[in-house]
Length: 87
Image 1 (tube, helix red, strand yellow):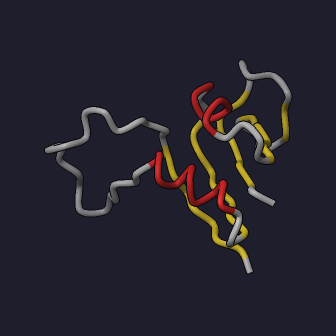
Image 2: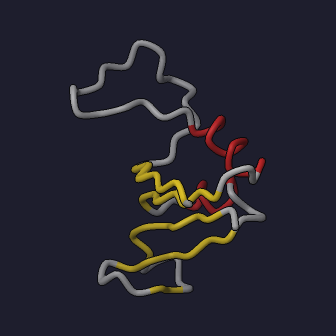
């Protein structure tokens, strides 16, 4: 069994207190998500919009960068999304 999380944009959450969200949005505590992913109790796949911060935060996990056509890429300039897996 796997847990798939479409996480959107990566943020450290420094200024999220009091921030308004639309009804279809959910607040994600990315720092806690990093800890959960690193615990490796569950198999987790997280999909983020590309950011170099994601690569640094999830170093040590399997990371795949994906371009706008859905193909795997090794070039950060072409990446649109990042898929992080802890297994």
